[in-house]
Length: 490
Image 1 (cartoon, rainbow, N blue to C red):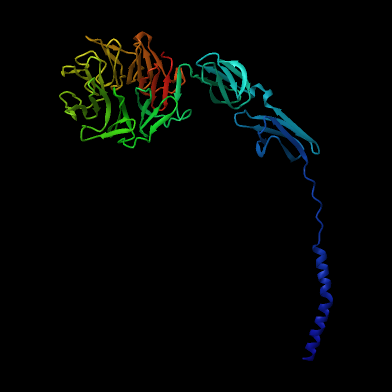
Image 2 (cartoon, rainbow, N blue to C red; image 1 turned 90 degrees about the horizontal axis):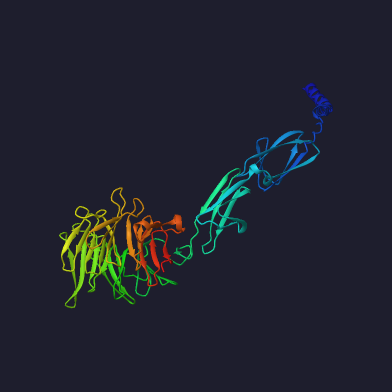
């Protein structure tokens, strides 16, 4: 046992002496020295352009940089640099990079004709000044602006006695952009829209003018609005309206206004509203037309027939004419002429006429020479002719017929496939026809003119009504274009 202990002690001493040496030898074997890294390439190019903001591509790869900017850490070699920008053609250049040298490249796109575009400026009226971004060009319409740097431009036209107008145009490299505008003749036309006035809506359904020259217009959403030439009113101030959707407006000899709606009608005098008159006296709540005779009786055209309202023994009396007199049992227009005749328009059966002897008769295109049986409007000329406007029937547009006291004649002056919405005949025997495709003005069929956006610059493509004030001005209600005044009728 003693021998074993001696041997173990001897081994421990030998280990204590030799292991440090072994560890030292092991450490010497794993230590090494890394050779120094090669320096990075230092090729450099600065790229600028006019205009600025072109995306920079190197050998087809986007570098997430835009001019003016630099490309660095380039090695020796030939590179293709491409510049890209919306509306411009791509442009590429090749550069030879030498390490240690700083290079630069500048590309002026305004000097390259193939990079530029042109703008053809045209106008319905010739001779309008062409202004680009508020800077005069010295050119007049029609003309072409050449060598224009691609981009977005505001082009404005200016002409004496016309309202300035402008549009935006886009110019691309190598392309010709066209711009055509119509300037509004301010001596003839004035429109009132939500963009240029305090009118509360552009969607008007009808119009009339009272004895004080106040314009009253119906809407399909806010009731009635009015305009005295300076101030706007109406709308929400009529809480007694059965609905805010107005179909027609009547004005009687006493300057009382009648507002026909989809829920009956009311009468209005300043400070006094009467109604609504509804199912207790009317065959339908949808009021399409209102007229008055010389005795002050009311004639209310509804989708359920015609109702006459008169004063009898101090009380208001209501009488509805049945299908014996109004075959359609529906009325689209009512008119009382200077000879005491009542004219009633229907959507399918033509005209029901009551003379001043209370005799009724039917006029349609089977027994008389009229356009069709869908009657929408009446008017009387200074010579006593009765003019009738018709609506569309299937694919056939409406037209006009007039009665000269002995026979009916047809006049075809409306745009194809259009319908008459209202007729006005002024003291000079000029006929104004409000249609769904513009306004037609004529004295005889040979001098008919159609006014719409294409020749006025005003949105009068869909007209819902027309009226004339005491000064001779023509007022037009439109659906979408607000209120329009024609001032050239003096």
